[in-house]
Image (cartoon, rainbow over the protein chains, first blue to last red):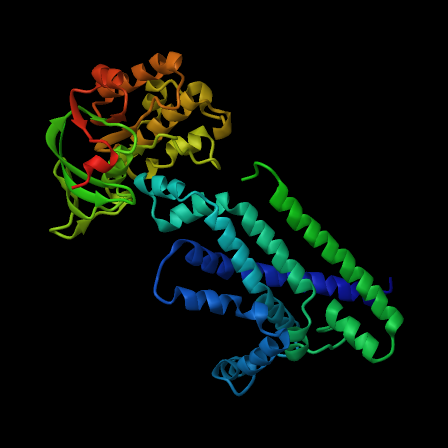
Length: 222
Length: 210
């Protein structure tokens, strides 16, 4: 494996890890709200959360490009603060995070729904408030679902292409991930090198899915 | 001794529970066949289930009153509730379970461990406990919050007949040494004779409605 391939693989794994860490807190919050709360507009939130799952990633990418671009208030504020996002590694993380968010949130929700609510009710009779119950009872008992969701989100982030190429591009050594690398190498006729990246991607994907299944199958784990 | 006043209507899928009871009690037995709403009544007192209307008072405190629009959340009620299946937190060991509710009032861990004979169990994980041991741990966990009343839902149901004598004395000790008023649910007349100084009868299932 050439030094360049190795660098791309390392960069992709690092970006996907950062994206997973970034996504977990909001995904846990949204997963808990969807599993445990009733409120008007819940169906709307459910739809919004799942949207990046069905929307073409390229479309999500274009939306992100507008959102962080100079024509949006957010982009202008970032520009004024001297923060560059588009076509940097930060854009790679954001693209990966946005695309994997629905998978993680749905997994967390399923994990929390499997926790017997009566444990939470008993904790309340013992004087615990909502946040303490979440921290000490609900999340530990849903840990398997949350871990599986994190691995699933990480796997999805590894393969992210559409949104990444829109807002991060394919700058060698700066924003080029495995998926984007395969595409650009084929484009410029270096197909042999593309195949190496395909092999690395397949290996990583295999490992991640294997880990996710292992976490879900493990018996008696809390 | 605590003044207990319950006057509620609570509709469930299969029946309507109507209870009127007002008494000063040390141990109030709650007796009735399966499906007569015994557990539902305990859950209403503990703040897990909301009655359609009525009032629940324990001691000086109004826990629920539809007329005054009072419905204290479970965590502010100071009610100890031990469900039939104990519901110990499976992610914590025995000590973690007992101490869970200690933050608020700080009951006496040492004396509860002695009274309920839990020394040998403190480091155990929940799945390693027998039905009777789980009940004792759950009772200690509830008592750590210094509740104004302890609700026990058929504490002997998950225990073998021969071993019932082993847990009953603990419940009697709680009554004698800690002076915590008890509301004790069972469908076994014999148990009540041993324990309760007053008995509230709940009718059978559907007959109870209206």
